[in-house]
Image (tube, rainbow, N blue to C red):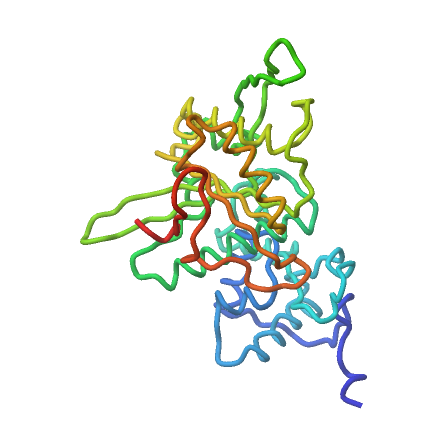
Length: 324
């Protein structure tokens, strides 16, 4: 009998319950404004409460009865979706509450509802959000670290950048000698990070900063392509190298440095990417590109990254990004 009373996870079924918003509900809306998608276990990790079960029930009320948050339909296409924590996004009513309280983000369609970086397919975007959320949660547990969101970065960016249609689009021109071509390949690229964040390190009263572009790959992007107009890791690494060389991150985003994090779901694919990076880096090494693979697919809904686990580097020892 109890099972029959449960509402569907996949479609709204209102019980007529009247929703009175709480301070934690508002914090939930703000979190989903910053992260386009987050699963219930991530939301609970951020917002807490005496009972995770009661917290999930509240999410259900806000979804079914309040229509403040939504469960993206595309998640139900995942294998074993019914066993994974449900993913949520901010719905129009939740966004309207933030606007009424003066808490809404920029009016740019790109920046609304956490659309940092380029538009990606749902599974990929969910992976991006979970990677960045895992890092933020790790930073919150470290007294010497403070997570700097893309919103804070954008608030401090030059005014001209904030007025751009896509302020995270970093234009560069690159060339690369291709073995089967007499002339170097040349291309004008627009580098768009999947995610962008910073870490503030405090030690003995001194503050230092690192900023990171995140690239998340579900082992689907080709490592090399001869056509630089098509997506590949060759294009991506060359683009970031030029962004850093020409200080585009400084002039456009107003950040003093830029490290590039690559997360992929397949170990052999990561090996191929790092082999390419070794070929492209001066002297075959770089401190600014960091790499990691994780076997957890977005469908499983697990916490994806541990902040203190080391990232691999080409030509240097592995580095934990929590280390100053």
